[in-house]
Image (cartoon, rainbow, N blue to C red):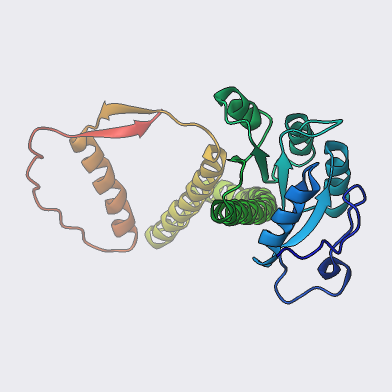
Length: 300
């Protein structure tokens, strides 16, 4: 025997007691039943309350829209044929208000045209009348679980997007800091190079003037050492400035042959001058020629 419906009339749905009081440790899903037949609503309530669902009733399409907007149900069971607003139009409006809301259309119209219209209106699924209650319970669980998984996925996507945006902002700040440090480095190198190059140029000029004066052999050796070291320092500073100027430029490359004998003799001559200035002896052995010649890549 079915128990009487203790709830208010269908035209004025009310929140179940579980909604009005303090929330339970595990919130039960709230279902909205929209059907113009009181007996059908009574049977559906009886079957679903035993499964632990909370229920809100509506006896028309317009009442369903109002109840959905007011109570924010987890799912809607929607009759296809109702007065003032049929289930298909009501489904379209519900779907427009909340695309993520699962809607199960209950209909005795099993024609393919009506089934296609139900899905086109935004229904998640449909179930024919008379209702097979075990099938209804399974479909409800499936749709609710799928909706919960979808909402959880959306939440994870939002959290991930927020983290990506946060990390992107951090990287942008780090890039800005690195660019500022690079500008400071360039300014420092330019300043130091200028401050070093100016006195070295004066020292080199003084040494060249000193060479025009009478010098004995020992003084001339010391003079040559000082002049060579001064020239080496100036070349080092010039290379540092050249390296600074090359940063950020797109350099091409070209293959060119290297004259190894000429390069070898120029290196030996440079080293011999340094060893003679320090009263050292340099011994050079014969080196075999490289097989097949030699090429290198130089910057252009």
